[in-house]
Amino acid sequence: MSRSAVVPRGNPIVARLDELEALVDEAASGNPVFLSIREKNEAVTRLFRLRDRIDGLAIAVVAVSEDVAAEHGARSSADWLAHATRSDYRSAVRSARLGEALVDRWHQLHDALLHGAVTSDQAEAIAAALGALPRDVDPEILDKAEAHLIEEATRHTPRQLRILGRKVLEVVAPETYDDHERRLLEAEEARARRRVFLNFRYNHDGTTDIHGRVPDSIADRLRIYLESFTSPRQRPGDADLDPEPSWDPHADSHMGRERRRPYSERLGEAFCALLERIPAELLPQHGGSSTTMVVTIDYEQLRDGLGAAEISGGGRISAGEARRLACMATIIPAVLGGPSQVLDVGRASRLFTPAQRLAMTLRDQECRAEGCTIPATWCEAHHLERPWAAGGRTDLADGALLCSHHHHRAHDLGYQHQVLPNGQLRFQRLR
Image 1 (cartoon, rainbow, N blue to C red):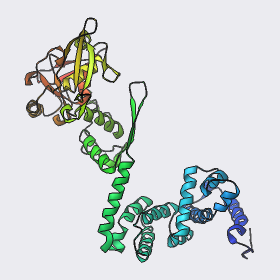
Image 2: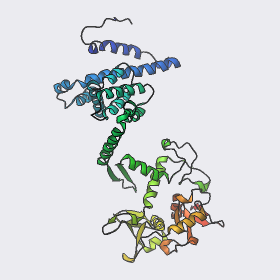
Image 3: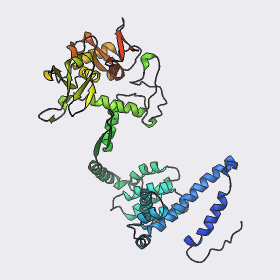
Image 4: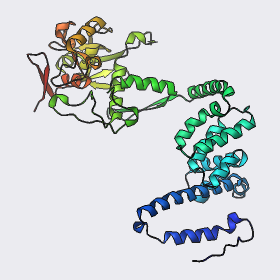
């Protein structure tokens, strides 16, 4: 199909649209299945480059389209764009903001986008980085920073450009970098503190969804705490892939098989374990007493592991779970007898002292369950023969270290366990 190379009269942005659409129609008539490897490579890279160039042209028009929005009674050009193009509103807002930034401030970046030197995602990352620089930075330094990041875009992804953008002044104006970095971090930290929240949504199936936002420094601290409960060989970027062999606190290793679990699940259970290990004496007073969970349960149920217990706040847990928690002394059991008569309110201190715990760590080295190699430092103290709920003594002879998985099994009525001659515990599911 031959077409005239003469540019039509009028603004070429509109005048060439018919021709562009016709060319796209013609290109779309081809079947990509029949492309060679070389042709596929060329087609993909050039088509995406053209797409980004057209994006740059489109957002430039959106940036000056407030009059169109007013003509249609829209609140803003982003509202009009979302409606006119049937696009997501958040995407329309991003396009409008990027267009305004490029047209009003970052002319080098806009030109680079129009000529395919950067992608639209890279342009957004660079514009955000430049927009975060102090308002009192010399315009000449801003021009250097803009040019530097455009050059870096030839070999870096949008995410990497955001990181480089935070330190761009260190390259183009090192004499101002330290002061800028301090102000940037202080503002970022203050902004992060204002945006903190935490929500609980009860699913009424025994689980609760926790959704929140915390400063990066707090999140990093929490991740370090949680990863101390999981494999030290787990790499943060591996997430759900978990390609390396690693210790899994909840793998069924005692049954001779290693069950792979998503790292997110292990972090979730590590979070539970972390909360169970917070000493009540380190927490602030709540309601006139130390911050402690009180579990109310009938004595017979606590002794036999049957029935349910009620926890302070209105929730309910199984008697077996109450017995497991009692081993760790992170709760105060309020034992009832007869018609809800309070027989005893247990001790709020930990049952095993730090010295006893250290002695068990040196003695056991690992989880005492047969075949389990979870390190003793990750384990929980358990009463072997006589449960604490039944008046068991807190001594080394009756104490054993079990990983969280096997500690749950020890209080699970669906399992039985026996102490082997070598001191290990063998678990077996009841049929």
